[in-house]
Length: 116
Length: 147
Image (cartoon, rainbow over all chains, first blue to last red; front, side):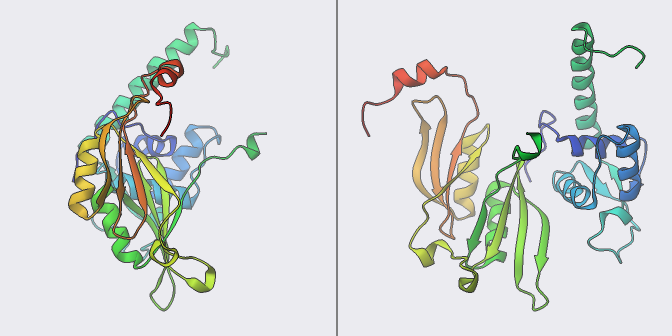
């Protein structure tokens, strides 16, 4: 399979899934909660989005399923456990650095609300 | 306004033998299968593929639903374009997977490397680089006077 370039753009949903898994393995429900809590409810990952995003990340080798996942729920990513792969960790780190850079540029441009 | 702003345009391809077609799109273009809907009798309703950040739906031909595959209608009036950095490598890979070359990959006047392939199921694919390095004026000055 062709290798994943760390420069491939991540969708917002993909970035959130990788970010959720950066601190350890989680099941899909926890990823959904993480997205909602981290973004103050501004970004939600409904089951269909979660399932498709994780399918894509699995195919790209950025996440892997943890052994012992609940095989009784073949079409429900919410009950399965996932973790980052090494390329996945690099991809989310690259994206986080890029976002930090953009966020600093936004702050320099006077685009940060006070008190946040 | 934002509720009416489309999020994406997604082609839905009808083919004779969806299973084989999906296998081809995975091998040829590095598509990833995201989702599959199968009827109780085992026939594929649709398969949702991710191709880069785009999506493609693939369904089995079903004349009763007016879902006709290219061989049935005698060709395809649509070209699906894939934008990719290494267009030569992708075209090569597609050909190895069974695509036919309709137009070899070459440098075009609008600044991209570009070629046209036909997949084994009759759908036509343009493959193109994403350099986008020429200005509109440069493209205009390179445009041939007639085809």
